[in-house]
Image 1 (cartoon, rainbow, N blue to C red):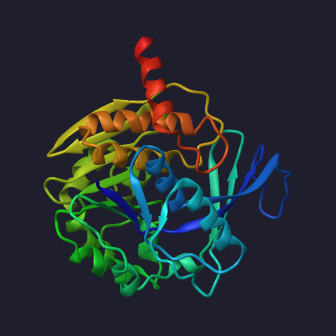
Image 2 (cartoon, rainbow, N blue to C red; image 1 turned 90 degrees about the horizontal axis):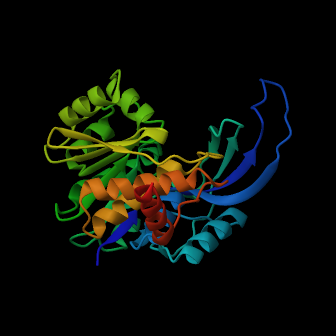
Image 3 (cartoon, helix red, strand yellow; image 1 turned 60 degrees about the horizontal axis):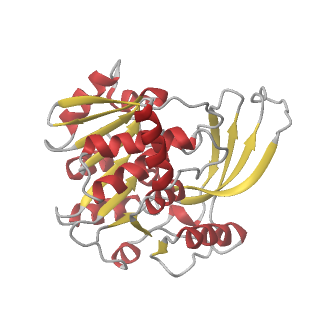
Length: 309
């Protein structure tokens, strides 16, 4: 059976809910606050909950946040590929959600920002596996070069997934340029795709992305409540979303990505995997917190309910 090797960063989110963000120099009271595993954990939890075995191929720290990260992964059944703890602690992200369900982040990188060639070689990637690469990883000097070198050495029978995240804004950066020809699946939200390509809309972004990526690449661009667009070999298709009452958008894109990959790994056509991913993202925004992806049973139920309507 295939597995997902996630090379991104598991960090701890301090999740807070507010009516509105404070002005510079101001202060507001939060309605809730909690520490939760986040970052790459959200994608891995989504995939694991939907039937895909997951290995975290990243660093984790020594200290209270490292302990929380490992406990969360173990509770989900995620295999920790690199057994040895780093000397420093796992990093922290302050994740604030306002009354509109929009979220804002401030991140501090810890042990997860480091990764060596030896670390990457410690878990075997096999034919049929999926390797998940986060754009955040390309920003960390302690892991970026080793990660790109390792990805470029992988056989083609291993599929490479790339999620640019909000901070990778151009195809022209050297490591990004090197990685582009090896990507098999691109997954991002619309804002990230527009920023990366300089396009005015999603249709144009898909066309421009195809110019940078291999001919057979599968592209997924999420469009919030409207669902997502998928495109392969120049054939874009819109996959409608599901109508729900959103309370927190934190983690919705991660839920979408993890469930989409799980669907592909189980042999589903891209269109069907995208529909399941849309359902998972819709359910995720109805819950507070970062790792709110539903399991396969809940996804099935929402799809059935929508079909009955």
